[in-house]
Length: 225
Image 1 (cartoon, rainbow, N blue to C red):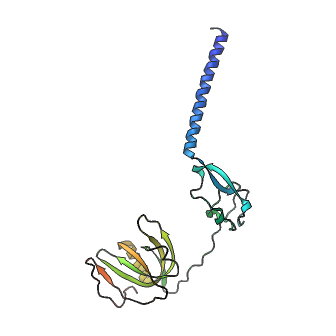
Image 2: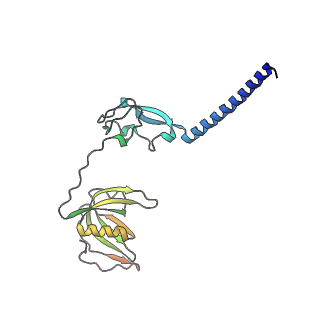
Image 3: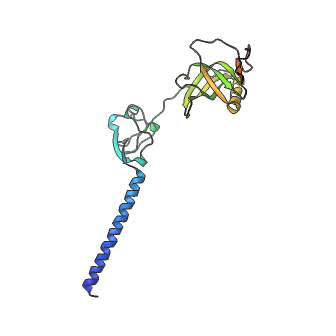
């Protein structure tokens, strides 16, 4: 075989191998792009920012990054402006509320003999908020009863649920009531919070309803009150 023919064959083989390699690289790049997702806009720090710095419009920039590497929740600039950073932030860092200082919240005053007990109950998050007073209704296997009356809600937050409204509420209660609520959280089928009207401090006793839906006789006092 002549040198010219050998050189032509080697050149042809190099071209084929180069084409295969380029095709393989293109496939890999396409697979990586598919995994990373399309490019999206992300709010980032335009320059390095010190801890305690209050964010201004000039501190913010928008960068397009693959969706896979973007924050799970989009950040709204209005929620950041004017608020101080809790930590130092390098340039290009995605910004979010998790990087901000959180205002100190004064703990509710608990008096001697009281406890702050948290329960997860069925109730409307729009109604059960800090400061309201509510009754606690507990459903057990055979009976539903008004277990606690006129308790103060110290704090509340919604709890995700698929088919019902739930809240996690912190209640101001006595020690005995706190123990009762702990047991109810473990053994009761359901706990509900019934919000009272402002200023309504009346006691109604402990009405209860059994499986036959018959309202039982009121009791004058609650064993947990």
